[in-house]
Image (cartoon, rainbow, N blue to C red):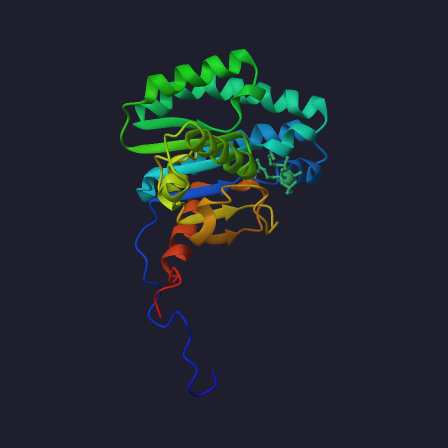
Length: 247
Ligand code: IPE
Ligand code: IPE
Ligand code: MG
């Protein structure tokens, strides 16, 4: 180390445990390809890794866990893969909601629901109602979700309020804007994890990620475990968050 230059993390990080962790669950296809299996097998194993992430988050005392399950652009995948993913989602909702509830987890889904089938929409509504009073953790599933869609929806609702005289242009500020987003009842993510080695947001939580910490992991999503979550917590707690204002 050159004299005079101090390492950034001399005394470890200065942050407490994250309240909100968001995960871009990527790499199911590559996990399957490595084993010469169909992509659907990777997605099936990916659904199992969701359980690992949830138990890791519960153990870490995280209040909000957001999982990116299907993006607005994922509709452009081959029809067969979309059908597989929707089938897995149905299976997940029919099998896991009871156990989520038992663990004190509230479920919330964000994304363009209109594009999802009627039966999936009914399952989501039922699951949200069934778990709405649970307090231990909120599990947010981003489904048919795109950050740009979400921002445009907020713009439309604010523009309608202005056009109808319920709000003036001068009233539009960050708080009002945040309040018009699907995540209006969540704090911004403290940490965003992406698996698979890719280092991009892929249209995830664009507004909310303004000051999030990022952790890009080389492992593929089906290999994600509770221990992976625990080491991510350690890594996060070694970070220094400044929010632009702290020297
Ligand atoms: C993530 O895995 C699951 C979804 C995006 C639905 P991928 O299917 O993107 O897997 P890779 O990136 O092709 O390996
Ligand atoms: C992002 O992964 C979306 C989800 C994990 C649900 P993608 O695999 O769709 O993203 P790109 O295409 O690599 O950017
Ligand atoms: Mg991918």
